[in-house]
Image (tube, rainbow, N blue to C red; front, side, top):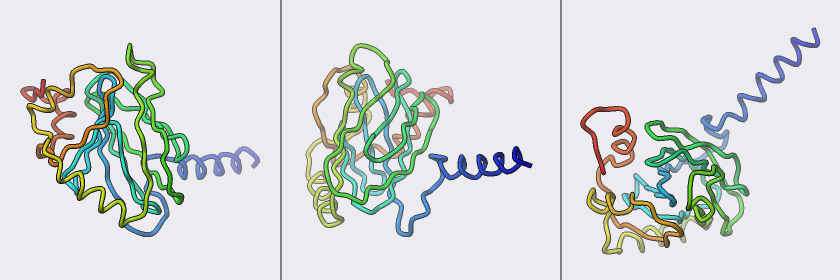
Length: 190
């Protein structure tokens, strides 16, 4: 009887902590697509059609669903102040749901040793109010640089301590194409 009770408690608790599971919080869910590269992070905001390198801004009290993949060796996506760590792997998509109830700037990082630039594979997470988030999106949309396939071929090249970069537009369906190049013949972005 004790084993059955412990088994039920373990089952329930472990499923509540599943990073793929949406949080039980009312309101809209924002999606950000994260791609680990050598040795930087690319973040795509599909709804806003913008992208950044090594920097994200999210609205406070809004659940964020990260879709995570890699176009490089395996990495581990982690924002310690906001929650769980999850791996990024080439040809696969992992997910992580996070929320912040406090404004501030947090540190995100790769916790998986994956080569020379591992120790500099950090990114800033700016948690702000909804109005400030919208102003930031509009500011990024005024940038001259867009993330087309030619630009992607440049940023996918290994670099250490890459500066924050903003892109005012993103090649359609880029995140899925990054994954598909490892699973479908004929898709090549490099």
